[in-house]
Length: 147
Image (tube, rainbow, N blue to C red; front, side, top):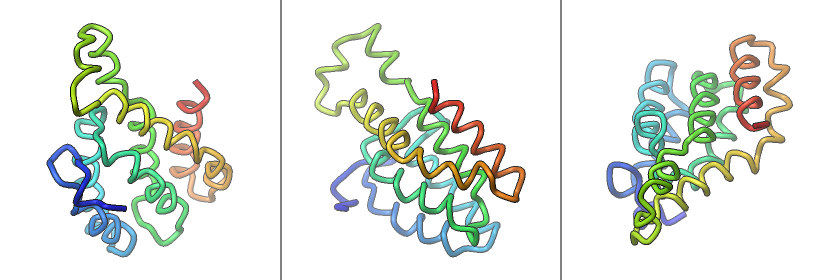
């Protein structure tokens, strides 16, 4: 993935791989902090996605499935936020000129939602996870994906 060449909500997405690695390998506090930073870069305010969001989604799905990752519930909630994101699409409905903007945020938002839906088959194991919080977060994400 050419991370430096794509954009997140802060500018260059070059820092995303390091954040993903920290989420994967960090202790609980470190991983949660890195996930918070990642969230601000790919799903700011819980609903504003950008070009790098869709590219990041497969990595989030993989992290959510790894039992050693300490913030799996938060990752599932982030995936749900991405799946729910319609900020640009809603705004473009009122202001169609946005669709002609060189940075097509509407397309990036749709791609991000599609990326979450494309891997929804991975939810099966999470729905039956022994950790009730993970199972509940998985059910919430599943409900969003079934809409």
